[in-house]
Image (cartoon, rainbow, N blue to C red):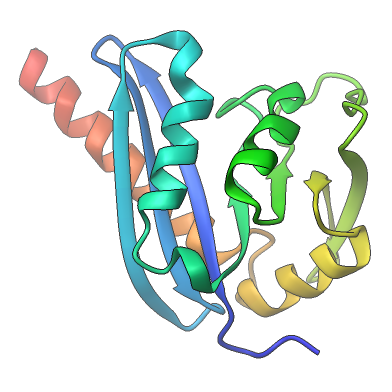
Length: 169
């Protein structure tokens, strides 16, 4: 049984003129924000190593139960296995912009997680679909279909991009 205050790292990212910005937010369940980590790279091929470094540099790294990526645009799904082998923490990638049913890589699983009467398509590595659903149940507010850690990471990325855009105008 999973505890109500398990630590989850939610990751969001954006690519703009200045580079690829990734932000991670650690939440204890859906209750408390526990930490924020970030990084930036201009190297398009360096996304996986940036995300890996962000996860490993997280102060709560040894206590993380899972990492949830906000969208398939952070890293390609075929890189999930590579990331998993580097960080050794279960990964869940939320699929938001899928045009057709994506093809999982050999080590990943494609499933739907039921959250607050919604079905959310995800790729998982290192965790079963059933356990991913339990994680989402703990980490989502009753009115949401994405974990709080992911929601807050997306807010921070959005604000950072907005601020950078205003400075360059």
